[in-house]
Length: 123
Length: 106
Image (cartoon, rainbow over the protein chains, first blue to last red):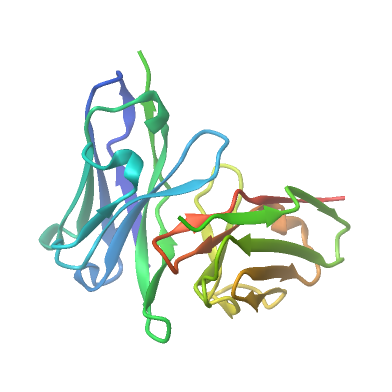
């Protein structure tokens, strides 16, 4: 069974740091680009960061650029999101998802999602 | 950034009737359009990708159509288990989502 399991969320003070992890199973992890998406309480979905298969290409939404970093360990089938200088507006459920390549459009969509981990930034 | 706008915000439909959800992009996304279903307390579930291609295990009552900037998700005969929030998403230029349409039973 294809599965993604996030961990590492919690309560952190403004300005603090957290590292989220995503454990992948049931598929060949190093064949896929991966992505983090977040959802603030009662709000919609927002792409946060993505990474290519070997970790050499990374992209971030403007609001987290310079504060968050994304990485992966293909030997451990794991994806990470390092979050620094956290703000109240970073409070959200963070999902990791697998990106599926669509050859005829040369684009990537999210086909498998984890259950998410909750990050709360508050004093 | 490509802005995706969904309508209506809430859709109330009788069981067995058709539900039609709309999604508009601020610019063309070609066929790079997906639909996701999210039930309370759950993560999003892929329904449709490439405008009209059903994901694995998705019932045939779900269908997608459209092109360019205008897209539609149709649930041909609404079932109680279809009550959820539905998001459209473009993946033509990075990834952005609509604000969601909540589907409820009338």
